[in-house]
Structure formats: C-alpha cells, structure tokens
Image (cartoon, rainbow, N blue to C red; front, side, top):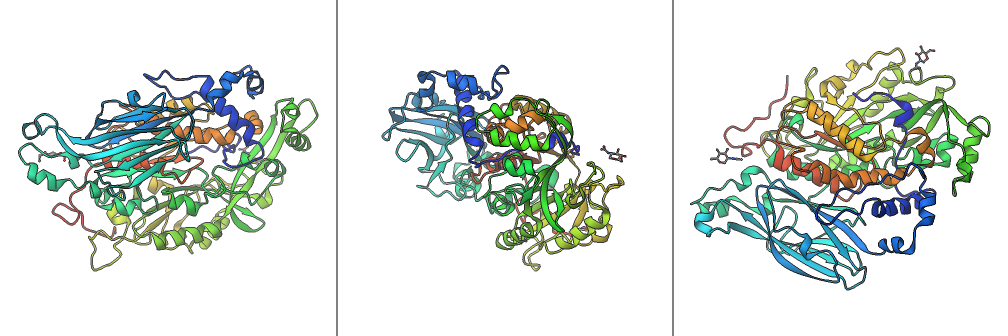
Length: 614
Ligand SMILES: *[C@@H]1O[C@H](CO)[C@@H](O)[C@H](O)[C@H]1NC(C)=O
Ligand SMILES: *[C@@H]1O[C@H](CO)[C@@H](O)[C@H](O)[C@H]1NC(C)=O
C-alpha cells in the first residue's frame, strides 16, 4: 500500500507549461546529449542528471561551445523495436540518403521476445530518408521451407526528413489488427531518445508444426492475431483483445494506469501552487481522465478533496518547517516565484515553508461525466478507479495530514455523488477478491441471451482505499451492493521509489517486482514508474520533462532481456505525464498478448461460462 508521505509525494510533473519549462527543456536535451552519448554498438539509456556542482545546469549551459550546440540540430533518436511475438523478424534490406546512422544499425534478426534499440541519425534536411524492411518468419518449418522458414510478409521502417523528423512503419505485405496491408503508422518522434514500436501475438499463434503448412497458413491470421502498437485502438483495446484475454484473472494481466489521475489542470490552490502550477500538475492540460481513458489508461488514482463544499481531485502537501535553498531569486526566470516563496516563508536567509500547499485538479462531477461518456461509447472495457488520499481542504487551518483527512460521513457523501457513475460492478457480490475475478465475469454480456459471447458491457470498479482522521479504514458497507469495494478486495502491492533519479527508481521497482511476483497468479503488483522530486528541487525543478523521460525509458527497461517472464510482470503500469501516443499501452499490450496465460478458444470446450459470483 502506498505510504502517505506528503513531503515527497506532492511534487509533480507537468507538461506544457510555458513559464518555467523552456529553460529546463533545453537543459534536459543538452544533458541527454552531453553526459552520455552512447556508443552506437551498445547504446545505454541516456543519463539525465545534472552535475552536482551545478544542480540547476545554468553554468554548464552557458559554457557550452557551438560544436556541442550543433549536436542538437541533428535529427537523432533510437527506434526501439519490441518483438513480443513468437515470430522471428528477419532483415530484408533497405537504403538511405543522408543518414549517418541507419542501414548498419539494424540487426539481421530480432528474436521472439527480444527488444532492440536502433540508432537513427539524419543530417537534419528535408530530403533525408531511409527504409528498412523486415519479414515476419515462422521458424522450425525447415523441412518444407528449405531452411528459410515460412514468411508471413513484410513491414518497413521508414525515416522521412520532410515534415519531420519522422519515423513510421509501413505494413507492406503484412497486416496487423487495425493496420491493413499498405497502411502507414507514424511513430511519435522523441529527439535523442527512444521511439518504441511493439509487435505482439500470443505464443500459440506461432505454434505450427512441420508438415502441416496448408493448415498452418490458415491458422495464423495476422490481421486478427498480430497487434502492432502504435496502431492498436487505444479506446477499444480490451474489446479488441477480449478473445485473447477473456479467461484471465485481473492478477494475470496488465493495465496502463495513471498517477494522480485528476491532476491535468489546476482549478484552484494555494499561492505557491498558483505561482507554479506545474508543481502539482501530473499530466498535460488536455489529458483529462476522459482523454486518458481514450488513450488506453484503465487504472486511475483519484484523490478526492472537498473544496468550497464541492468535490474535486487534489494534490496537497503538508510542510512542516521545510528549509528552502537560498539564492532562488537569482535563478533567471524564478525571481517572481522567489518573492512568492518569500511571502510564505520566514526571513531572507533561511526561508521556511509551513502548512498546506497544493492545488485542485479536475472536478469529480466532470470525471463522472467523462467516465459515463467513455463506457457508453466503448463497451467491453474494464476501468478501475482507486479512491484514496482524501482531504478536507475547507478546514485545513492548524490541521496536520492525519487530522485533515475526510471523515466517514464525508466519504459517504462522496460515494453518494459517485452513484451517478454508470456501469458500476453491481453484479459482483460482497467479499469477493476482485483480483481473482476473470475478465469474463468482470464484464457482463451485452446481450444476456448470449452470456458467453464476445460482446461485453464495460465495467467500472470503485475501490476505496483510505483512512478517516481517527485512523479507521473508510467503511463502504452502506455501498457494497452498489459496486464499491474495499482495497483489500483488490490488494495491489504499490510502493513508490521516492527518488528523482531514474536509475534508482528503475532498480527499486524491478527489485520489488522480483520479490512480489514469482508466478503469474501471485498478488497484484503496481509498477510505480514515477519520479519524486525532493523538496528543494520541487521549487526549481525540471519536473515536466522528468516524467516524460521516465516514460521514454519504460519500454526499453521493462523489455530488457530477463526482466519479465511469463510469471513476472506488473499488473498496473502507473505513470505521470500519460500521453495519447499509445506508447505505455504498447508496452502493456506486449505483456497481455505475449506473456499472459493463454485462453481457450472463446465459446469452445474448456471455456469458462459466465457465472455471477455469489
Ligand atoms: C503447441 O502445441 C503443442 C502440441 O499441440 C502443445 O503441447 C503446446 O502446449 C502448444 N504451445 C502453445 C504455446 O500453445
Ligand atoms: C497530528 O496531530 C495530532 C494531534 O496533535 C497528533 O496526535 C498526530 O500524531 C499528528 N499526526 C501527524 C502525522 O503528525
């Protein structure tokens, strides 16, 4: 369970705020290139830390020569190809024009389950171009295919300088779900960093034995069984994958999640936060809960607060005389903010922060509307809303973080408002362990006369995970037939790393995953892929880009050799700065299609029958 550590949880990560971001955006980019230009043979992940002698990076920035700056004008990125399928990807060849790194950077083969990182560099001109084709091969059919395997067709990676830099994938003679032959999927360009592309299919899709080619050709239909991401429908991915996943328990599958899901915009707050909204904003302004749903997220961390008598989401920190670093007013661009801090804190030399600071995000009423819009338009999707960290911001005066919690009565008021959420899981009985429910039972049939068919309703699970000021767990007893559940019914190991260092966070989370997940039906594990700024960095911090950089590392690190197995993978991949690029979903789709247990043919023998839990 996530500990309440208010000093260190508040600090957050935004995108798209013009005020403080540009300075640090360029710094991040600089340091990406300067601190560790990876050798092209074995590129490591880019190190983003600034030198300890120059934590703001300002001196380093001004001392950079023009040659260093010219690094930035090149178009450079790493195509991250994740092959989460039982097929071999074999290089067919390609060509390029004005590409210092392209042809030779692609490996001859990408094995099933393997990920590779291909350095892509162009001169930065409009006519830069590159193509590289791969064919999807079924090995082990050498008797019939004379040692070359059976080919299922080609995809081509393409670089285009025009209107670019741009990386894209053309489905030349190979189709995938939602990607017909001939279609082109443009990948989101990330200068100097990973651009992921994931191909996924179930292990049995490649389970064709020698001597049955004519049958085998019928068996694998890439347009239905091969998932390419980007390319998968982000709003309807569970419905698209229902045949693949229907038999899985929640603890046997993975969901994309968002951290502090309501904090995509600021609807009110204390002075410091109004001066610096990006200190509480975890997602870009346009990425409301509704947009996160459409972009594929299915697990939401909703932190309710009462503010002027209304229910909002909030992100607040209780400061207990925290000293701030001196000289803030000398940091260019932060003069006004330093004055703001001066008002809050003590004297000029040693400024202290006391009491509550924070802000409100989306209103709960708006989130309910967005949930209802989404589930009515998109049947067949499972949505988990985890409610915790509640606060009464209308009575903060003199109260610490325990005393400012919501009372049982206030929680019941909130649950009453949440009765407006449609598609609650009222069909699930009390005292049920949700993590052991199969997707089949969680999503009721759309047509009751077809209880075992593929067409399902959407379901929203409302899980309450909080304590009252007298330290008792919030009771959902009055709402237990209304689709509200205790966190104990959906137990998830969720412990964040509490660091702003990317590598430390990754090691912490992988260590926890190794300890808590040794088989696919172990209790659920939430991968908390978030960086937490220490208090002093919160003020001057590089916050926005940190979250985005962490997200860039996700596919590369999670799919590194041996990190995940069929028995060990996260059930929730929780991030800040969730975007609509489909990248987190792609990483999760790889888990659900390639690593998760396989299901019997829907409706066939051995299939589960829809059965309302008692
Ligand atoms: C592949 O087929 C064999 C023989 O039918 C079976 O034993 C094995 O479990 C199958 N593997 C997968 C991944 O379905
Ligand atoms: C909050 O204040 C109450 C009353 O003074 C005290 O009992 C409690 O330990 C405090 N809690 C924290 C987390 O400081």
